[in-house]
Amino acid sequence: MNSLNDIWSEIIKILSEELSPTTINTWFLDCTPVELDDCKLVLHTPSEFKKGILNERFLPQIKKALYNLFSTEFEVVILCSEAEMRAYTDQKRRDNELPEIAGYTFDRFVVGPSNKFAHAAAEAVANNDDITYNPLLIYGNSGLGKTHLLLSIGATIHDRYPNKKIVYIKGDQFTNELIKSIREGTAEDFRTKYRNADLFLIDDIQFIAGKPQTQEEFFHTFNNIYEAGHQIVITSDRPPKDMAALDDRLRTRFEGGLLADIEPPDYETRVAIIKNKAAQFGLIISEEAVNYIAENVKANIRQLEGVIKKLTAYKAILNTEIDLEAVKRAIADVIKNEDYIPQPKKIIQETAKFFNVSEEDLIGKNQSKKCSQPRQISMYLIRTLTNLSLQDIGKEFSGRNHATVLTSIRNVEDMSRKDTELMNIIRDITANINSPE
Image (tube, rainbow, N blue to C red; front, side, top):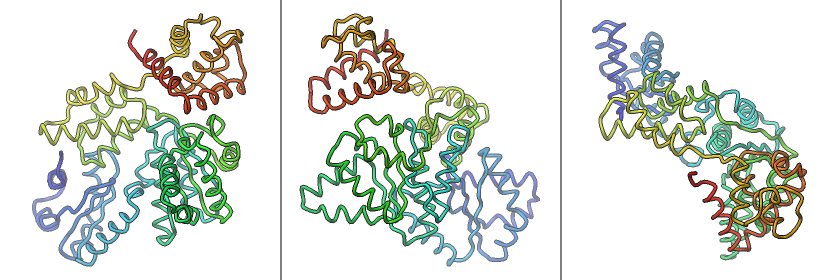
């Protein structure tokens, strides 16, 4: 791993190519790095006079050196007095009072065509005092940056209004806390915690679908916050219309706000993300290596971050340069295990084989019980394992309509929660679908 002092030494080397030894000794020799994080370098110099000279004369050169190392723009902050150091430390402490949102900022989020609208909507919610888009629901597959935008809204509003009550919770945690409050007789405390929020951030709302008591409590929580004129921001892995087990009252409320989707990043955005993540981890990586990663790791941002973390570990543990060969080793398992999305035909084949029915009967009009349940299960599995819409799934089954497919999926979801045997059947068919040919 490149230590902070190592990186500062590299910056001094780059500056020495443009500046004289006297200049380096006079202005940089007693300048020490404090922190490099979130594309920001914090330096300390012993006097106000030197701080002024560094800011006025040498800031562009320092930023240029950082760009040469990391291929991304950096902010540079120069501190001098103990008071400034204390103020900086205090600000870091305040940021940690809401640990979930610490480190999540809009300037760390790489914007591209796939997420431009969601990013703009999130910034509008964070920076405008008018509650115009309420709720804001950001949806998309896992690892594309939904949580980053959600928490960036929280961080921005926390900076603007430190006294506002911001509450962040995941959908499954909301359920767990509700159950605990009922068991311990603290339901009123639970309601006070959430219903009095000035900003309510809930991540992965899809996990409350199909849980009647949780949905009932969330419905009243939502109404209390909404009617008080306070902001609600939600993330989900799919749009409300595709949440088969979601209460209709909640679906209509979600759809009454602003829906913003995020799709997988294109090549140019992936390149920018890799450079941004490398800078955050203080990792120097070549343009050739960046391009190789961007060409081969395509599924989501979380995988890209995982690759950068692995390369950082390589640097720390093996003390080796991050060349193209090191990158190829680091991402070999990522490429091999990248999320597999089966074809609908494969799912239909494996479901028909498991239940010993013909594929023609499974996708056709045969309404016997022998075919109807396998058909519903195969529709459910296509919805779960692929990115097909309900309409496209219907086309795979002799042109059945959106409503029929939705009803089939809901039936399987409802039954699987009560029927252990059905859950095992679904698990076995899924294993067969994902097994090698």
